[in-house]
Image (cartoon, rainbow, N blue to C red; front, side):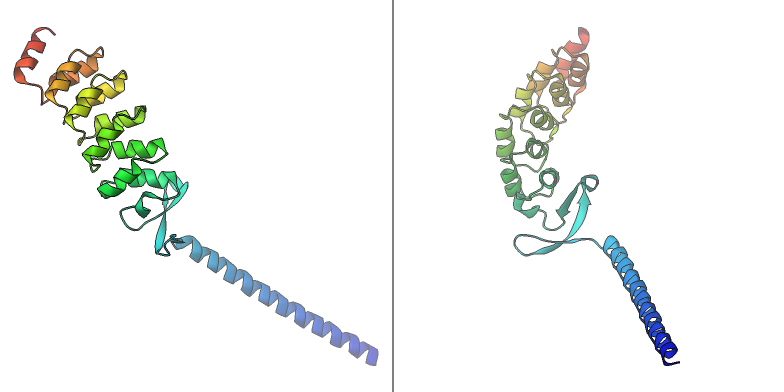
Length: 209
């Protein structure tokens, strides 16, 4: 009899312990799921090197995490090249930061600075000596590119660059006269239709075309 009672007592304790363990496991699992769901719906917090905390957002299709904070994009020193590209293309980026980004080691950062209408003229002039297609391409499209840069690019050996010079509303008359003789018909037509082309030159061009 005492043996039977002992076994029953031990069995009851084991069942009670197992039940308590199952309840704990269910509570722990529910808490973990709730925490994961909350984390997924809450923007990640990232601590910058200077200790300042900013909300983090997805950029470039989720390939990069970047700080959303001051318009200087971490003073042009963000560790992600993709974030620096985005900062260099931001028209609200301060000129001093754009000037700093124009010395970046990544070519697409330089190209973004070259295409930014807020970039200082001195920075655009220096970039015009950079030997890269994407830099020239963005300089040709930039409304803030000074006349001498656009005139220089009107003689570029790349047809796409010359086409966008002819399409730039800021293109000066001297560059348009050069582009009227371009080997590409589409570029010649853009130059002929440009608002900055003097009327008498347009009339002469129309007589021969």
